[in-house]
Length: 430
Ligand code: SDX
Image (cartoon, rainbow, N blue to C red; front, top):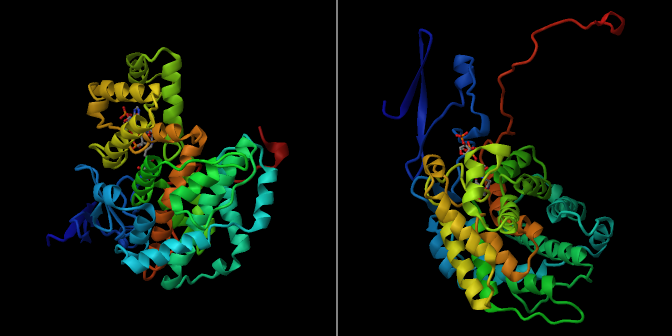
């Protein structure tokens, strides 16, 4: 009986099985709830609702644990690369030497986008937000890869499709930066690995070489690894829901990019930098800013703080803060925003307002400091997040599509509108 939940409605008692995951998280299986009781659940924001079973990423929000396929992200951030982590997420295990070599070489092979797609950029204004460009370009990829319209995606191909997408998104991101800067596009090079290639496409030009600094590569490697997946967040759930209608992979990912763009989600990293710049313009007074948040005026939030799942420190924030501090030291960059961010974190974590609500720095609080030090524009921060999250999104999309008996996602509602009433001809309306 310990694996059964009892529900009493009126004078009737219903029983539902309890499901338990490998990390002993428990859920009440209510797949027959409406059939048995005529009731649905009601859970706006889905904070208490498990939408799927997954073996990709595990988070323990109370203990601040994050693992990809069982491996703690702290170990991956120290020892792995983004390409190797992408392989782990996609295939479930770390690659052997020859598997990694073969997988890595595919990123170079598939780095180009169809030459005709360059013309798309002529239609975007230089000031267009790069997330809007990325989402439309990714969806347009499906026009060039009609084979992806096929419903069945054989597992053996998924690595290649994932690499194509991740590699092309890197090129699209770099091209959108060049468009913004009014500079000619720089094409991917066959002799450069994933991140150095991205940096070269971004910052080199016909009249200037760009020196690829190892510590810059290392900092981006860490950020990409830490952003690669995060179980059923808003963006990933969007990718799964869109994919559940049998929409193709690129259409599903394009929707995920739009969800991630939101300032409450992946767009927060851009808002954190803008918030820190505003505090700096106002004299750097963090206490005054915190007072504004506590007064709840104008719905001001401490961007980069708080999390639906982590009610302890977001483990990623700790790693990113250390990486940002180390990078600025190595590059000899003295960014006042880092000092303001550290002061803001210290001040907030002394305030009951944040302590009572278990609000801590999340993945977005310090990442913008690294992007600024590298020269990546503030509005490209969400694009960097999306580039890394491609690995998780493809993995989650495939897992959803390969779930036996996978059904289209279609939640119910509690209707609170008008009850039945008749149509009134316009001449009789009061
Ligand atoms: C990401 O889900 C994931 O895994 C996402 C992510 C990933 O890897 O995919 O981790 C990436 O999206 C990180 C979060 C980035 N967003 C931000 O930094 C935006 C600022 N944070 C908040 O908007 C908020 O904390 C959320 C959106 C992250 C979480 O929202 P919840 O879970 O719905 O929490 P809530 O709004 O119900 O907050 C509970 C209370 C409220 O106060 P009360 O009404 O109870 O008095 O805390 C307050 C909120 O007003 N609160 C904040 C706050 N976050 C929550 N108050 C001030 N500043 C904040 N940042």
